[in-house]
Image 1 (cartoon, each protein chain N blue to C red):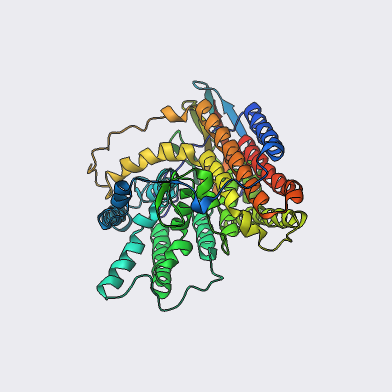
Image 2 (cartoon, rainbow over the protein chains, first blue to last red):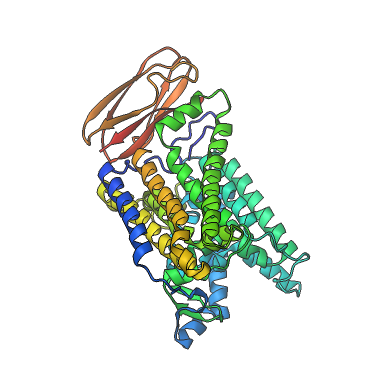
Length: 445
Length: 79
């Protein structure tokens, strides 16, 4: 994120003025080698009959625990928490000073965007419970005596995740490309647009809009599939493996595109840091924002087209034809996307997450210390270069292995027996490309 | 720096912790030089070289940039 100068006074340092060291070459090669070996060993050794039965899998929570978690009180408390935290953060957005100490960019780019990831991986789709816009929509409709689930228009069946894919792309454009994206006027406009789009969508099409079309809910829900806490097809809360949770993710229009956006934008974030790329951008005769926007969209397209081509190819080799294949395998990309996100944003969350709370303690920028954190000096204990590099390689390789296993199980379920192994080769090729590509970016950019 | 052209072209300068580095930067217009992470900010007058002394501290990758226009001059890699 770039800080900017709006008033002639220099607004220094935005979010993330420190970046990670490049991954050591040896670690990058080791990670790539492990990914490669695991992929092909898995192909030869893993089960031949489908093992994952996501929608039915899981051990039910004790009824008393499930009843508490699902109770109206718990839901109301979480919804209220979402509203209160948002309102607190809104103080700085609306009334704060437009300077480097304003917490708003930290709240949006670090706590909301990155912070939702570990919360969701631990507890499931938490933003569904916390989302203040969902709550606002529900409260208004209940007061009017209407059912929040029903809108004036039905959700078009082909819409699927497409609005979320576009929303996530728009958000990452704001985060990675938009000029002055750490300044209040830009952030206010972005929040206004987001709130307007979400409320119009919700009121027009009912609360199901938020399930698949609201970008942060989808971001949280997809990573939340890895949580041990999940909901089975029969509606019961269960403890289940991350593989089962992802296997239970229903295929839907736009799901593959959404995951490609999650993967591609993170990859662009890494690539844009390479001196070669930014030298190209700033020496181009075209406006910088335009070149960067083209770069972001191009990376997402390359990731997405590679995905579509390889899954269709796998479907043809597997004897099913290419149709429907991108949606059928989209769930297997989620752990790979998570690996990328952890590798790229671990240190940002650790360091700037602490700064976020320090700045939140003084939302108006008048020297007050509402949370008693003003004197907190961010600890860099979790930012040691060796530790960061290890986290990066382990997360990318783990994501790859989970992706391979998920794709394998789906392939043996869908493809006829004798074609199942061959049919997976295009998928492995694609995943190895993503993983080696991701490690290369971490090493060189 | 001339217009939008940075010479030598942007690259990475490696620095050990505790090692000192002197940057001498000449810009063809009035601007500010900002060294991220080191929180150094210096005004620079057109054609007048400005000297910035830095000492490698926390490990990381940091950018040196101008603000008008926003251009990245180099990256400092502190090990």
